[in-house]
Length: 302
Image (cartoon, rainbow, N blue to C red; front, side, top):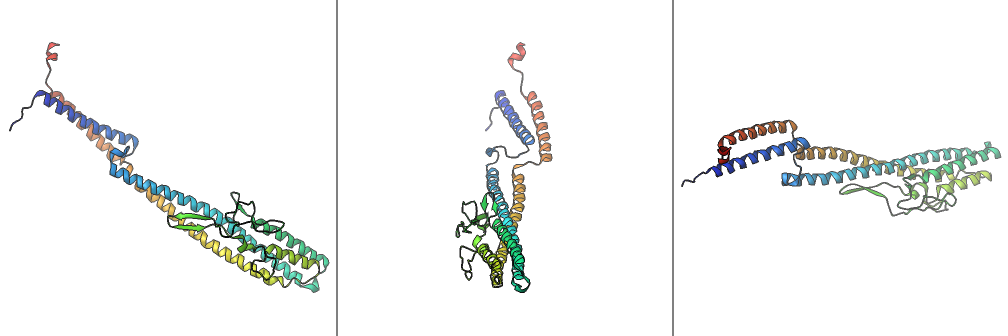
């Protein structure tokens, strides 16, 4: 069956083809100028959905990286305070050992030892009240300005309310340290595991000033020092975990950027080539169409 092709049909067909070529060229120009393959969802719904999914994952990964960075800052401060506490306790032990040599000590030397121990206690209180962004690293989720009162040594922290940072969709890491684990609690009983290290030093200085033998306090210092070192080991393990998470987050962020770029961004060299080819095709369609379209009656009337 034959269909009659009129001048109008040929004209419409030619114009439609030119419009397609022009639209294709305009799309390539948009991609070349923006540098992106997908400028709106309708350009490629499937690839746009993949890009959105990757961006959600990228956002989550960036948040985990920020959490790890914040947690690392907490743990670094705690580790520094614990190491300083360990050094101070060792010095206190040396002073107690000196004070235990009763045959070589007089009132003045014992007072000098007591004064230095008082200074160590003050330094320990400063370490116990170490803060990060206004919050004590040894007081859990407490909103108090200090973990230990400088006068009464009372602990103001919240024992079971820990500070955690999420470093992946399935992993959280504790970033604070319970002050009572490092410095003892509110107990004034020397035989108690919660015996306050601050009260311990007060008892030692009182013994020195009254001429007593401070030697029995050596075991108590050793017990507290062992707890400090255990806390330091725990902090070190958490720090390693968070550092590993930060490295993974950094690697994942780089990988996601590459994946998103592969979906959204153009190959500029290839796009320029395609654009040149499309320009040639459009120019050719203009030339061909100008020959196909016959003059109208108005052309003759002119």
